[in-house]
Length: 161
Image (cartoon, rainbow, N blue to C red):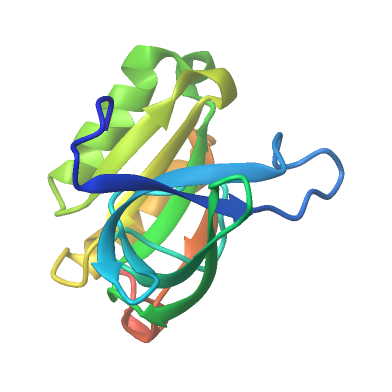
């Protein structure tokens, strides 16, 4: 999401940095104010663990006006997976081909050039078995490294198709 809509606000997450990763101590995501000090996450995180698009999180505003995320109060049942694209050096074309391949299976995604990353949003109605199959195949072929940022029980119990 490039331009903020008036209904959107920034929700900041503190990150735990270990061995210089992730490359920032804070990630901010777009959120939709849901009242009572909560916000619904409106984009897929690249570095935050344990949250996915659509999750509703507690928020608090500090003395400088920065809105900080707290715990998830209502999970969306979406999953977040992160890929570091190795194929073609993680080029824009390679990242877009990854996004396109997962889109065919019902997942959304965003890419970030600086870290050759793709962050995937996998809704519960996506073809989880086929997504797992493609993820494992791509990792075996050394097209990408993958990390589970936020997964559900449905994801954990789905067999590779």
